[in-house]
Length: 324
Image (cartoon, rainbow, N blue to C red; front, side, top):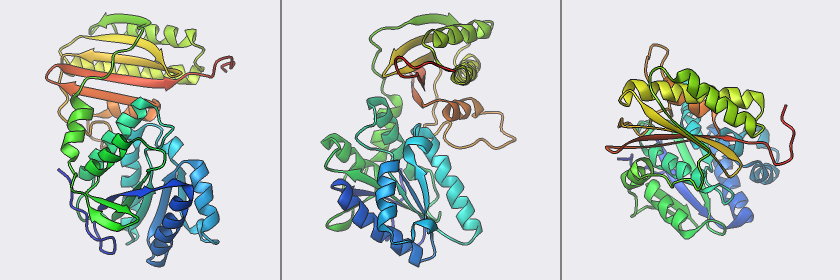
């Protein structure tokens, strides 16, 4: 698995981890990286959290207007959306005869445990998400001053090359298959308390929708979020009934101010990239997970010969807030 990275000065797909220590190091190194891309006429894209983006803007000496900035806390809140984002940018740039030079930081210290797991899976899947000749140089920053050591170890496993104060070197630990295997096939942690649980079959879709709506309303979830969650659960339940043996189980609970809906069945999903790329208009498959990824704050899928589990996370309003 994985595409060997080439030197950044050449064309083709490059996926590299960038290890830095604190904001000053990030800004100084990233400003040089951005400036080189602008000199080469590349489409430079920076997808980091808003606070870090503002620091980099200020260091670009008037060139910030030539850079596309995106708030990773928004566009990458659900890491399963990010691959399509880069695909769209690369496709648009290639039509113009250009290359994308990107800084994408999907992992930062404030990520929750579940978000971190999905971001690491995303980083591993990026190695197979583009052809070797795709015009994308993607640098993924990792703050060594704030991230746990095991996160940095995994970064070396998910990136074929690493950039740090010593320059660019191949990663001797590059093994994205192992990360995908762990993140896609190993069971998720069990919840402490389950609020609602029911079994379902082909005649129970209406019952499922009602249960999700009632539980979400009990936690003062805004109406538009309730609608998005109900639709997402329905789409996953339909897939479960069609491809997972005809029946399944729904469980719901609250974790980290998010309502979690888990659907499980006896089926097996072999494609770990499921739901990350937009299905073509003529396709009859893959739309359910894709839609859930667009509507939910986080989607977790675990599948093996033991069966499949899909968890949909949608944020709840802060305690004491009044929903609209």
